[in-house]
Image 1 (cartoon, rainbow, N blue to C red):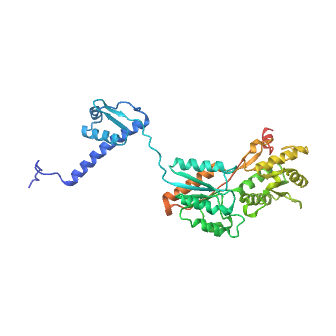
Image 2: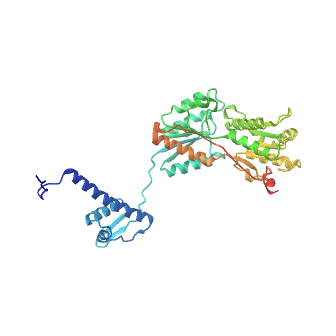
Image 3: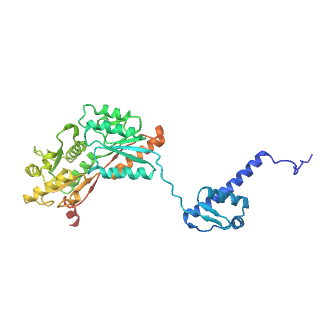
Length: 393
């Protein structure tokens, strides 16, 4: 028997109804998206009257119902306003107060010299991701460190970026374990357990200070120097000793060994306590360096290198002609009488990356891989090493 054609009284199958509805939804949504992109791209400026529903229906071949739904969608999104008897117009951008999704606690030893750029990087990245920052400092006082962390936790932070005390402790591994056991995710900044190697399970973002010092010695060696000294500052209290110094010394030693430099039994690595440098005792350090026969030196940090320049000048020793210098930190190296070539850690980038790692951890949870990042500092060439003169010749 021939198939009977469904008459008007017969309802269409449910599946056909669903398909038709889906097609209609897709059409109005496509039109809404196209109009939205045009508005955001500036095709229609704020306050501009949009084509009428009838015009768009004719131009697109869509039904008036579909066009009307597209306009209603744009109104709901705050992109279009309807004016009775006048038509539809592009709405002014609505400024809603930003609401932070996360509050990030940041613990720094201080906000002087090294850390302002780091903090700026953290703040800028958090702000760009809709997060806010709560800051606390402990001024290199280990007894205040836990109180500062408790302050941040009591403030309701969702995660922590910490620059804690690890040097000078009897058991730094235990200290790190305590920090990792805090009730929120933790990212260490400029701190890690290097001695553990692959056993280090901390999430951290650090400067490769060993690499920076190594590169500085290699740079001076390429300039022809074979007796390269090292001058560092040592803090009197072991607990507050600068963790960067040990890495700088290690990097220097690795470069000297790699190059096979012969010290001929003379010490050319010297250290003075920070108060001595502040008391302008650079004269003594210059005498030690001069007596070692060194023609170049890596100096930790900028202020000490600038003081050394002054001592050299008082003895008629020219920088860089008679003594080439590279400072470590690049905080005020360009302000020295002879602008200092300097090893420059990526401070701002460190802050950005630490903030990014913590936000990823908060967003992705256990699905996020463990980040252990090291940024190798670059060398900023100025006048004190003689490289510019070599380049000109």
